[in-house]
Image (cartoon, rainbow, N blue to C red; front, side):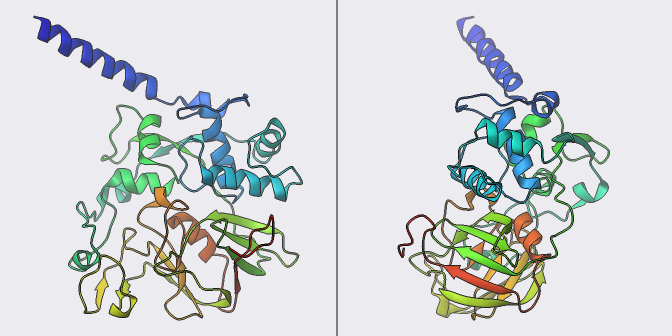
Length: 331
């Protein structure tokens, strides 16, 4: 009897916890600025992240939480709008953000047959050599595909849609409105800031048109310095491993190729640079952008890489910045 009561109590606790974790559409759409730093997923932060994403000051993965990527996006937005750029969401920043878009942050989306049809790659090995045996590096399931389409974490997608499955066409989901509009036409150059781990799209006056969080190089294979230019853009690329890369953890001495797909090591798009074997590309793991290192290239979320790919063309200049904007000292 005691054991039965304990099981019931645990079940009730889990049920209450699940209900508490749900995110209400109106709570986000009508969120107002409040002081303090929330410890959990916050409707206010979710709204701010969606607004930043729409304005192309990307917070990376939309998750409704405070993070370094969110603070960097806020700071970039503040600097572009003549506000003190401390990266903190102040009331003044909030007012400027919310004035940028008057529509609802969350909207309804009807799942299509294409969303659930696949093909999916349910099991993806961690090691590159083993990935080479797969015919495609697709999404693992429809939930992952939908989360990436709307730039948010799978956890938040579930919280927005409690007790709803993601496998059936015709299902109505609550999702962020992350429509960014047409790409800006006046792109002059791309700046890769290695110290702040950001990629900036600049107009002819040096004003940022878009800012994305990035994983840039590592001690094993640092990102290049100096300048380069875009050679070409390859959508849905394959990934070619050359043994001369000598990546840590790769044991084979033979070259191999990994098939196409959004969970390919370079994601859904490759922006080829004039420096051999270097590029700007997507990632199979958007939650790690800006918090981990890369194999020398510049890694963005798939959606940010695709957004950038729509702005560049062969010959677009790319500058690698080795100094912080604050003190001008080499890093």
